[in-house]
Length: 313
Ligand code: OXD
Image 1 (tube, rainbow, N blue to C red):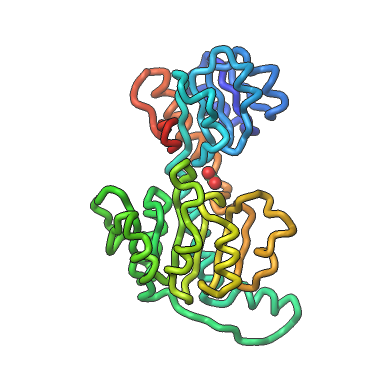
Image 2: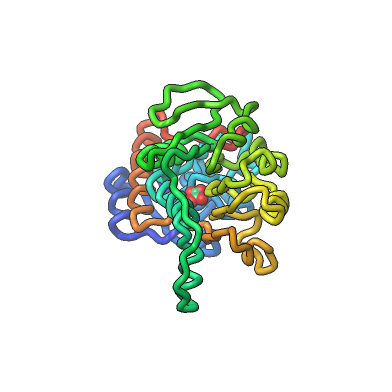
């Protein structure tokens, strides 16, 4: 079996995969180099942002595509959808770094760190506005594994936690679940709104101007999901009109965020370069998940994180 990984693999990770299937051939290379290996590849491992159209057209015996990321946006391409090729993702390994990132953004705002960092550069000793998270309400739009980890940490700060969810489930760290149809009601009572939705045809442009209008003027908006889940022009307009207090943004409609974007210069915006999930432990977790799925694939048993290609998640 040939496994083509479009990422650098350490010998440790290579060995981990060979322990599952000692007979397999594992090639780790760039997208460009992959052209010469794809024809007889059985399993393709790539980031969800990789454009695989050209590669896919040359694949003759592909059986499974695995995303190293949670997002599968550029892997779930039209020609793949009706074929018997499995698509899986790395959902479940992001909770720790992404939830820590959410609180880094949030605490920067409430403790004024983003302003203090600017003042420090200019050697200015000046107290800035500060606030507490304690007893504030944090809303999660998209309650998956990341949202649950955010909820757990919010509880440690003494926050009230609410979330939207289609099905009612027993949630340990959530004080109230709202039906997605009640989104505006949830936004109206929230001090912090965290978007953790996967990007699907259904969630594309999900958050619009009316939602910012429904939020408190003192609310902080945090997006660690995908830029396209939010109408970015509406977010910019809402920030300019001071309909919300600030936004912590890790993801954007276009990445890298173009230099012309007004978001760069807004004092009430903190920008990070799609780095919320980054961690020295990322590849260890990703390879553990993939190795486990590889043995399930070989044994033909139920695999983890199989994407419904029609739904996109
Ligand atoms: C992911 C991400 O999809 O980090 O994994 O954005």
